[in-house]
Image 1 (cartoon, rainbow, N blue to C red):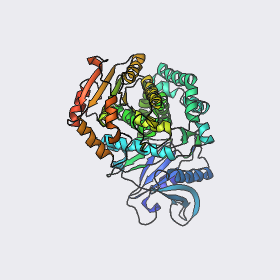
Image 2 (image 1 turned 30 degrees about the vertical axis):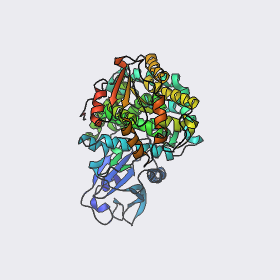
Image 3 (image 1 turned 135 degrees about the vertical axis):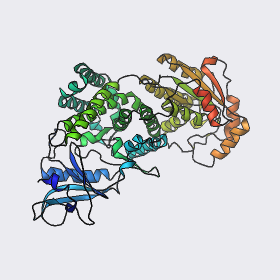
Image 4 (image 1 turned 120 degrees about the vertical axis):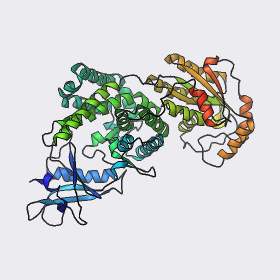
Length: 528
C-alpha cells in the first residue's frame, strides 16, 4: 500500500485518536478529514500550471499555503507537518520514522456552513452575500499591490493564461460542448483582449491588480451562525495565478453563484462589491473574467475527470461539472436576464432617496452609483468623513458638483455598457442635472425613470437629527436643509412615464412597491 491508502487508517493520526478518516480528492491534493482536523497532502503531479512532482516542491507549496491562507483564515491553518514512514513500513503523522512528505494541518470546519452547502439548503441569504462582498472588499484593500502584482494584471499576462487554458483543453471542451461553441468562446475571450487591452492595463496601473485569492469558490467560503466569514484554499502554487485584477478574483465567486443557478445573487454580489470598493469600472471587464473563470473551473474538472488515479465516481462527477462550466463560459458573453435601464433616485436632503435607491438596486441586482461616495472619492477622503461646508460652497460648490455629476454618470455608463441596469442616487435638484441623466439613458437606448422622493419637512429634519448621531456617507445636515430646499427646481420637464413621486414618510415597503410597479426586478424567492 502507498501513502494515499496508508493515511486512510485512523491509527495513522496522532492522539487524540480518530474513529474515522474521509478522503476527498482534487486535481492537486489528497485531503484527509478526521473528526476535528484536516490534513492536506499535495499529490505528486505536474499539471503544467502547477508542479508538485518532488518532495521539496510539495513542502514549499505547503508552507506557502499556510502563510497565504492565514490572511483570511488565521485560526484554521495550524501548521505544516511531516508525513513519516514508520518502522512498520506504513505512512503516518506520528513522531517516529523517516520524513517522506509534508501536509498542511488545518482545523476542520463544519461542512454544512460552506456557502455552497448553505445555498443547497436554501439558507444562503442576501445578507450573507452583502457581508461577503464587504469582506472581500476589505481583503482586497489590504492585499499587496506593487509592480509585481501590476505585471500579473497586464493584458499580456492575462492573455498568457487564456491561451494556456484553451491549449490545455483542446479537444476536451469540444467533446463536451461542441466544436463551434468551443471556438466561439475562444474567439470571444481573445477578441475581448484585443479590443480592451488598454482598459485592462489601466486597471492594473490604477492599483486594481493585487496579490489576491485566485480560487474564490463557494465551497471555500464558510459562514458561521453569527454570519462571520472564513475563506480557505487560495492558490498557493503560482503567484501569477493568485495575483491579478480584483475583478477577476470576485468574478470567480459571482460565476460560481451563477453556476449554482443564482444569477440574482451573483449580480447582487458584484453590485455590493462595486459600491464597497468604489470600483464601478469593474463592470467593463467582469463578463470577460467570469467567462475566463468558468473556463478555468471547467479545465480543472476536465483534468480530474481524466485522472486514472481518482475514484470513478469522482471522475464522472467532474465531467458533469466540466460540461456545465464550459457552457457557462459561453453564456458569460450573453445579455443579462434583467434589461438595462437607468433609475435615477433624487430628492431634497433626508428625503429617503439613498435608502430607497439601495433597496431598488438590490431588487434589480443593479449597482447603486451615488453622488455622495463619488464626491468623497474624488476628494480623496473616507466615505464617512464629514465635509461640513456651507450650502453650495467648498466641496459642494457649483463647479465641483458639476464634476461629481459627470463622474457619477460616467460610472453609470460603464454599467450600462455591460448590458446591466443601474441606479443613480443623487439629489437631481435642477432640470439641468436631470436632463444629463436622461440623456445618458437616451445614448444607451434604455428606459429612464426619475424617482422623486418626498417627505414632510419636519420628517426630513428629524431624520437629519438622527443622522447626526452616527457616521454617515451623506453630509446633509440641518444647517443647510432650508437653503437646499429653496434651490430645488420642481420637476415639470419629464413625462409621467419618466417621473414617479414617492412619499417616503409612509412605510418603506409602500415606497418600494410604488417603484417596483414601474421597474421589472428579479422574481422573489429564487432558489437553486
